[in-house]
Length: 250
Image 1 (cartoon, rainbow, N blue to C red):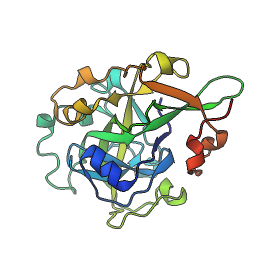
Image 2 (tube, one colour):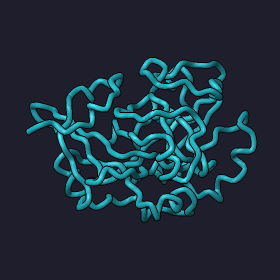
Image 3 (cartoon, helix red, strand yellow):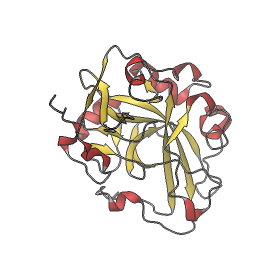
Image 4 (cartoon, rainbow, N blue to C red):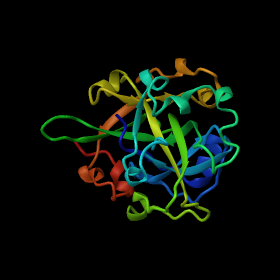
C-alpha cells in the first residue's frame, strides 16, 4: 500500500513542475498522512493544485463515518469496485455530473504530487524506508477523487495534525482522494507487496483525460529509484520535519 509520502518542494517549484497554480495554502510536507489535506490536481481543474483530504469517501458512506476514507485503490479493480469505478470511468461518461455541487457527488481522476513515499519492512525492527528517484525529482502518483456535500460541518484530522487552514475552504463540502497502487517493481518488492502508480511526466495529462488509461497502471521501473532507511519518528503522523527524510547512518 501507500500510507505515507513526502512532497518537499517549495510552492514556486511545485507550480513550475506541474504547470499549475497553488489555489490553497501550501508548505512542504515530510510526512503526508491519511486524513490530512494535501495538494492534488484534478481532471476537473487541471491548472490548479488544490488541497483535498487523503482518504476517499464514497457518496453512500454515512456522515458519521466519513473519517474512514479509503487510502488506496488497487489498479487491478478500480474499474469494477463501486467505491472507485465512477471516478475512474472515462470523462465523457461523467459529463453533467458537476453541473451543481448541491446535486450528486462529483468524482474523477487526479494527480498526487510527491517526491518520495514510505514503506515499512515487515521484520523484527519494522524499519521505515523512504523510496523515490535517485535525483529526488518530483513525480505524480495516480489518484482518484470524490466530492460530496455534507449536511453538517466537520473538523478534519488535519486540523489536529499541524496542517495549514484553507482561506477559502467550504466545510460543507467533503473533497477526498485516494492513491492508486499496483504490483511492486524489483526495488520495492524487497520492502512491500504494493507500490503507488508513478506516472511518467508524459503520461500525467493522459491519466486525467484518456478514455481508458489502463495501460498507465503498471509499476514504474526501479532502475532510477532508490530506497533508504529513515528514522522511526516518521511513524507518528503528527511529526512533520525535514529530518524525517535524512538517511540513517549505517
